[in-house]
Length: 306
Ligand code: CO
Image 1 (cartoon, rainbow, N blue to C red):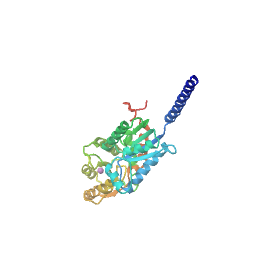
Image 2: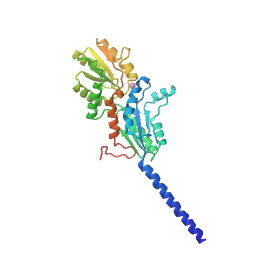
Image 3: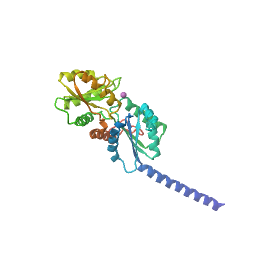
Image 4: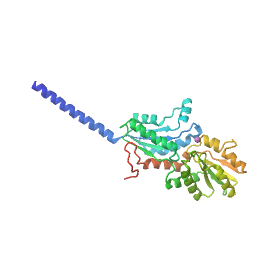
């Protein structure tokens, strides 16, 4: 009887020891963690636009060790549905987080590939927060990198990068007009006004307007005329040269920017190259991911480095 109790106790102690040991080992593994990257874009169904995403992905790869996953998600439901019908599956943000967790990622770096903190960025931020609340403890850390243009440093880096990407065939006296997307209710207006001012200070013949929002092409045409511009290079101020670039900017429809400028007697040179293809732009996104202290799992009010 006594021996049995002792034996039981002995077994109990060694079980407890084993348990403690295995907990220690697993916590050591968890302590070490596994990194992963999630790149989130609005999305595109235009195949020709994909080199922009490939270029950005290449800029993020060096931040990962061999075997650590990099996953994409599109915030646009319409684009994902359209691609799905063509048999091309792209993750939503929730699906991407499931996939990363399944691959054992504990420390996730999410990077927004949006131009500024407008509608789509806000949607991404909320999707991440509600996902973390739904699956507490699934990730140890989840940082969210800010979109492309926010600080004055960003604006200057972006302006220099896009102006350097204007084809060298541009002659003196040729203007450059960038097409941004914008937003109807004007959420982008101030960012774009600032961006336009920075661009214009570097290059007085560089302008920016958006499809939606305050700064429309109608405001730019008088400025071009006043400067005696007869030739205009047209470039997307968007990560990919997708539908807007191909149709609203460079298309043959009477209300495309190319047509509107031609109607004013100007010669236009559309450049169908997404900003994501430009190395200086890829660098800004990668820097924002590396600098982010906005941890959604352990939120703090202070977002700067300690
Ligand atoms: Co649009």
